[in-house]
Amino acid sequence: MSIRALYRRMPKSKRVCSYYRCQKELQSNPDFKNGHLYHHGCKMSAEEERYRCLECLNIFDATEASWDVTQKLHGDCVGETIKLMCPYCGSLNLKRLRMPDGKLVECKT
Image 1 (cartoon, rainbow, N blue to C red):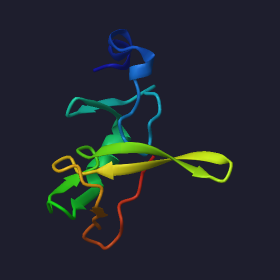
Image 2 (spheres, one colour):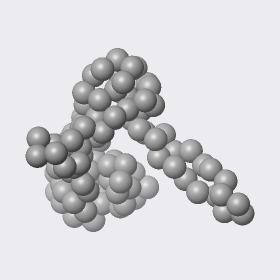
Image 3 (tube, rainbow, N blue to C red):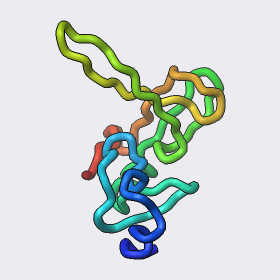
Image 4 (cartoon, one colour):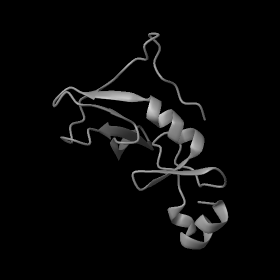
């Protein structure tokens, strides 16, 4: 879908990247997966980022994971923390898997 068609169909508040590390407005390179909207680079990064649920032992990538934003109080400041959840059982007990070369997958944005 072109960015012009996307702008006609969706309000500005809905044109946000679904990758939990980005969450910025889409201005170019839109891409879709499982009904979610991503920047193309964010989608590629999210597909490489793998997790294993330590409860149900399923393996999934960051495009499949659900996430929850919680607020924490740090002194006088309020900060937000993003916690990933297993899409199969809802557990927060996840382990990030390493690539075959032994490195963790890093964000490319």
